[in-house]
Length: 299
Image (cartoon, rainbow, N blue to C red; front, side, top):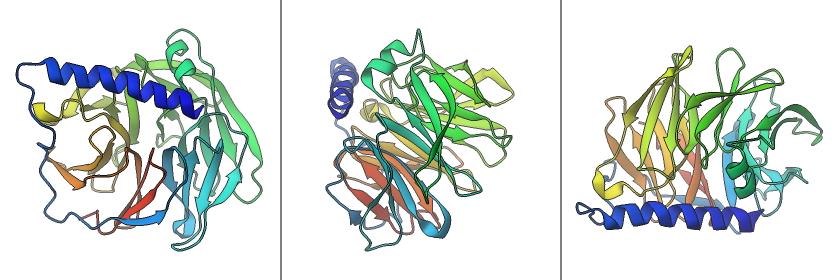
């Protein structure tokens, strides 16, 4: 569904860009300042087609969803060629690495599913065994399965960037949970009490939702007006509570510190779609088909 994903990004991105351009206070992009310790990007893989999500597992292995290949791929070590973990996955989305090394992956991150997901869920959640590619269905009925995060009790949360609500998945049960417009990247904070969601096709912002009370939704961080149409995408968080988010339409990766200040770790990337951490480094994937390392991204 690469074509569907491209159309979705263009249409929704154009709508947000039009919002910024028509506003009397609109200004050129790039208001988020560069991080003082911004690293030099290093390309680990190229020509991978449109990439949606990324996660890091044991021994620093990189896993990512490749939309054009309908597969979950992996890179075992720097300099090694990407390999398929599992194929025949229609519109693979978010990825979470479990403690036992298995992968939890969404299927159905497409334009049609996102639109219909406000009425009926068509996306699925799978568990993959990296060594064999064997997959087991966990749940079906997700609104879209774009971003994915796991809570401390094993509950999963999934997003729909064309939707109005987040999904909560407990066992095989899927329920529409918290109301968040156009949620994309998700990350559970180190305290285990909060879920953070990046808003994609709405004025750029990150909201925070209390896990034990989904009515408690509030803006955590937002950039200045010049970056209203940055198109926030995949996101992760470090042990200190700093967020790392792909600003897809801006071509940047941002770091959001604990005081909610925002700086750009990298600029000029090919529509970055997701970020994961490997030690102190950030791993970024994007619609341009690259897997990029940002060394020393974590202070």
